[in-house]
Length: 113
Image 1 (cartoon, helix red, strand yellow):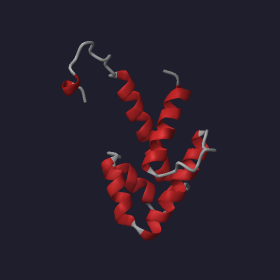
Image 2 (image 1 turned 30 degrees about the vertical axis):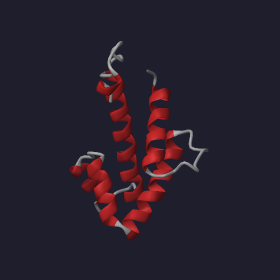
Image 3 (image 1 turned 90 degrees about the horizontal axis):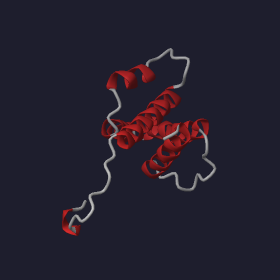
Image 4 (image 1 turned 135 degrees about the vertical axis):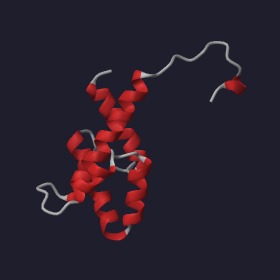
């Protein structure tokens, strides 16, 4: 699958996770990073616990988060974290597609999940 399709699937999953359904204009990596960064800014200011919970659930490396939050970075913390979130979601989609198995024909409905 090409990068465009992977990014598109990643965009859709991130839109759901961040409740960004009203952001239909998000059609590029930069626009997605900006939308995520806005939400991260809010969490950094008002609900740091929610942000860390979300990062933990997404399995984003703690060392990378600490680096993004370090003082003196050229990239603002909200953008650095947004990029980590986006890249992690892309990696998840790539892994899912790489190991996707075809549906088993004739499998009883109660065995499907």
